[in-house]
Image (cartoon, rainbow, N blue to C red; front, side, top):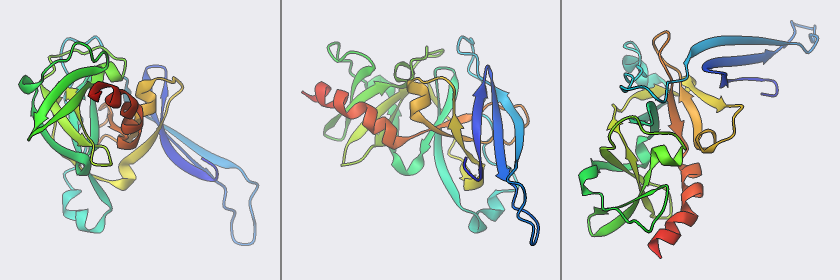
Length: 222
């Protein structure tokens, strides 16, 4: 964060909003080059072995919708996987279908769950929990079809759908974690929660998802 900025950081089992701003001086005084740092607690890392799915955190405040015409907002599709809540840009989501239509392919190997028919095309489906290297806590019930570039569509198998919040850009926080894993590589941002103590909704990067899957997807197609 050279010069200043804001992001979400994980320390132990807690998420924090971290902000920093460099001293800009005052009038003809250039300042001493110091930084002001603010660290605010956002919520606990969800328990992965919980018996019940935690509620979807509120992503849009009641007073924000009337101001959308004056704000830079992005719409997201939210869903539950591996005991947590995640999101993808709605612009990249083709549709969501019932996982009952999923046809398994035993030779595909993890993290692939099989294929689902979309029109006349068989779309490969990846188990998001397995991809994130996290255990599922509920039945996998929904396949989200995601457009990942070059006309390619990939299915993402999740536990449940949430809503489609419109989130102001200023409440999208960059994610920085100390642990390097598939989850930390795929998660690009976090939606700052409205309620105190709410957990985070983690935004997956479509580009990173495509980069991780293209090689494996080609092998499944072959």
